[in-house]
Length: 116
Length: 109
Image (cartoon, rainbow over all chains, first blue to last red; front, side, top):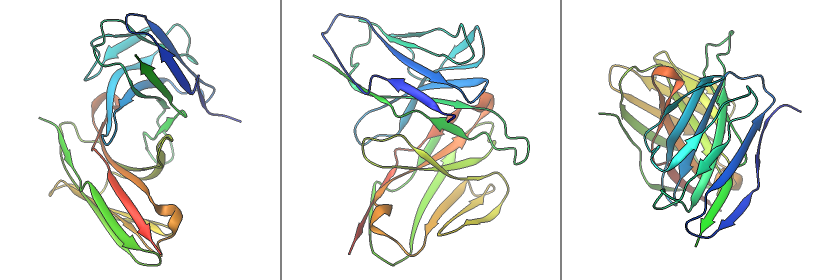
């Protein structure tokens, strides 16, 4: 089945440690995105990538880093510089649908990161 | 600036109709998405509007007015499983989505 996988679903880390969240898609999508969601809030864009080996900062990129070495993979590293890392992290991918012109983003199941 | 507004919470009765409004002010507008998100889960796609008018898809319909910067999601024949958050999102340049904070809908028997 095609889709987006994120692992693990729950992740616990000590303050001061870097942690990398994985995101893999087999939808053959060019674009991939990372969002952060805090309780009772909408999604905020951290980083996005339109093609392999290229990525841009979103609205809240400070304290995060990404890489896009393969089309299928877009890992996110939460560094110790991120002041409030505890959140629900969602990865998404998209491609333009030729028939409808829709840029629908498909989401992975998310990783809930808790840093203490 | 970029801003999307939608009500924080709504309640409705099973079997009824509910309309969730969304107003937006964004640059480089390329369409308006609605997503459904159950607690602790990923958002799932409901609808996409790029032209003015109403798009109907089963029990759910979505409306867009580009001149007014306004959209709504209409849910008919409400079921208990429709209790969720509904996210309005504007599509801008580089396929970037700007999300509203979401509307938490509670459906009661």
